[in-house]
Image 1 (cartoon, rainbow, N blue to C red):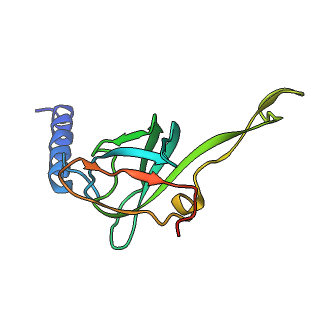
Image 2 (cartoon, rainbow, N blue to C red):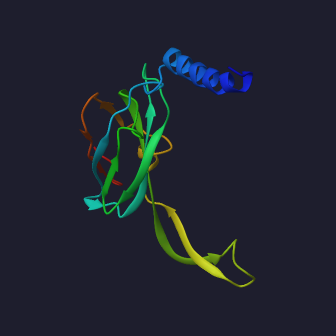
Length: 150
């Protein structure tokens, strides 16, 4: 056999051996799980926002998140949070009724001013913690309130 005929076979064999040694076809990193649920603020569905799951405690992994639309969110297991304890951050904006200069528009163009609608205890200073269980779709609902609880 000529040298150039062996080289492609050698590359294929090397690739297969690397795949076997590295766990080809297996998930890398911590186990993830699917999550879904409803998110309300003062009893009303959050129409548009975002939700993020941050590994907490002894749980290790990447932050996972997705959009909230019509008061619901759904994240597949492939993109979902790490199994275990997660701190949850929820964001949504609301219009103030004021117009402000549009930083991306031309001179004199304005846009609606928006502010964070969700209190800090549910996002930047979140106290929300949920357990994500392996091997199933976890339904995790969040009933948030802007009112102080006694």
